[in-house]
Image (tube, rainbow, N blue to C red):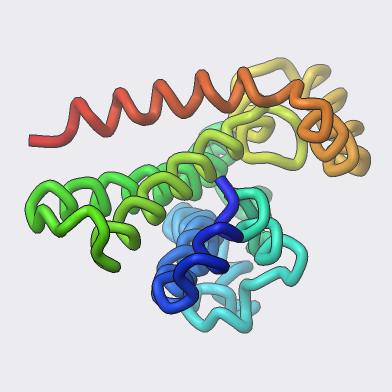
Length: 207
């Protein structure tokens, strides 16, 4: 879900929407560091990454992709799982934190839309719609179990050490694998399934 059409048709709305969308990827990374900190790893805090300052988080390519393709990324928050007592639990919870943050943002945006009931053509309606949909896509995309995406780290928390090693060996090439699969549309069905599940879960939580 790119936003180029909105930029062309309604630049003012695009600019207003840009801020919450940028903070969607910032909060995703911040959640990783915050959970790691709560579990005993001070790395992100020591490196000044537990902050809402966008300059500490934004990745130029990831930010561009957010607006071109509807998903993007920020600079990964450094985490040292060696500082967490239960390695597997830490891997699962820290990796899940960013996805949960995106789902929470989407839930809040949809809830506000239901409460406020803005006019469909209004800036408020568009901002809430795009914030919800982009965050659902971010959560779905990150659930894909290909390194370095969060889904692979969550999976590693459940599999054998041998499988963990195999997944970690893929990580240096993971970005290129993901780009290739996206280019050929191979990941579209996976993302659609995850989107449907997330949308269903949000719907279950709404009043």
